[in-house]
Length: 298
Ligand code: FPP
Ligand code: MG
Image 1 (cartoon, rainbow, N blue to C red):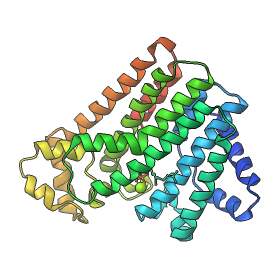
Image 2: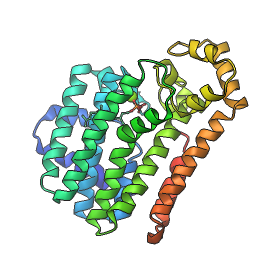
Image 3: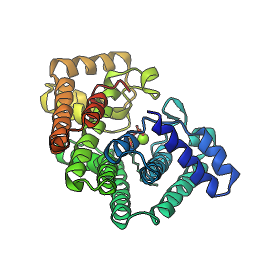
Image 4: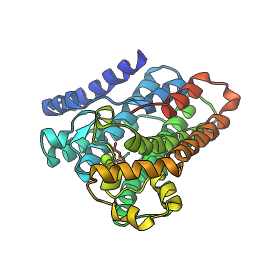
C-alpha cells in the first residue's frame, strides 16, 4: 500500500516538529510493523490529509505503547529487530514512548472532538488492559471471560477506536465500524496467541512458545486446560523454560485435543462477526484485511 509511506512521512513530520534530534534518531530505529490500524482507517475513510494524520496519531500511540510494553515484558526483540530497551535502556524506551504519546495527543487536539474522545478513551482502555495482562500472569488463569476482557482492552480497543474514528471522518455508521474493529481486534490477538505456539522463532521475530513461559494463559491453553487429561502436568510446565521433551508433549496435546484448531475457529467466527457488522457497506477491502489477518504467518 503506497499510502502507508505517506503515513510514515507524516509521523516523521510530527516528530521533526518536536525539534529534538535524539527523537528523530530513535524514530529511525523503530521497526515498522504491519500498520493494521492505518490500513483500516484508509480503507474506511479514504485518503486525505485528515485520514493520513489520524493514521499517524494512532501509529504513534501504538508505537508508544509497545515501547512501554517491551520494558514491562523485558522483551529485547520487536518485529525481528532489537527493541529500544535492548539497544539503549529502559529509561530511553519509556521516555521516547512518552514523547511519541504526548505528541500524538497534541495532534489529536486539532482533530474532531468525537474522534479525539474516541481515541483517547481507547488509550485509557489499553493501559488498563496492559495492567490486567500483567496481573493475569501472576497465577494460572483459567477464566475465558478474564482473558477476553483483557484482550479487548489491551488490543481490540485501539483497533475499534481506529475504525470508529475513520467512520466519523467519512460520515459512515460509527457503531457498525466500531463493531467491525472490535471483533477484528479480538481475532487479531487470538491469532497472535496461536502463532506463538505454531510458528518458529525466526518467523515470529521473537522466541516461540514464549507466552506460557511468561505466565500468559492464552486461548489455545484455555482450551487445552479444559480438555487435557493430565491437568496437573500441564500446570507444572507453567512459567517454566521447556525442555525439548516437554515442548513435544505440549504440542502433541494441542493436536490431540484440537485446541489449536478450535482457537483458529473461534478467531474465524469473530472475523465473520466483524464482516457481518459492515455488510451493508459491501467493502471488499475490509473483508480482505480480515482474511489476511487470520491467515497470516507472523
Ligand atoms: C502488547 O501486548 C501490548 C499492547 C498492545 C498494549 C500495551 C499498552 C501499554 C503499555 C499502556 C501504555 C500506553 C501508552 C500509549 C504509553 P503483548 O505483550 O501481548 O504483545 P507483544 O508480544 O507484541 O509484546
Ligand atoms: Mg509484550
